[in-house]
Image 1: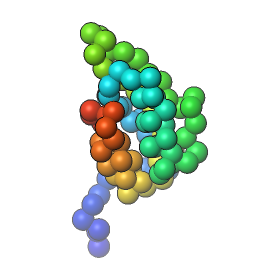
Image 2 (image 1 turned 90 degrees about the vertical axis):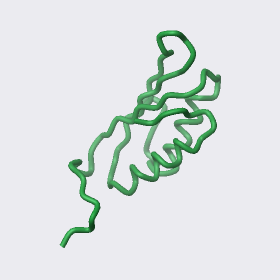
Image 3 (image 1 turned 180 degrees about the horizontal axis):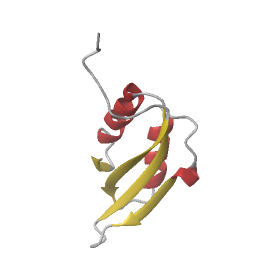
Image 4 (image 1 turned 120 degrees about the horizontal axis):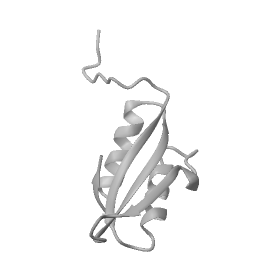
Length: 89
């Protein structure tokens, strides 16, 4: 019997989250703090940022130690509801 929610991801794994958001001095810290609520072992060196080509946004990639689909779903929901975040991939 299946749960109705299948995934192609094998857990645990390192999963890269791509986050686009506002150019703001607290963007990186805000993303890190949000991810840490569900993946507390995430450290500052797990996140890299760079400005968008026109400099209007900041892009961040966070390497998350993912343990379940539910954990990733919670991280996505938390990030997409944050005021500094525009898009999460």
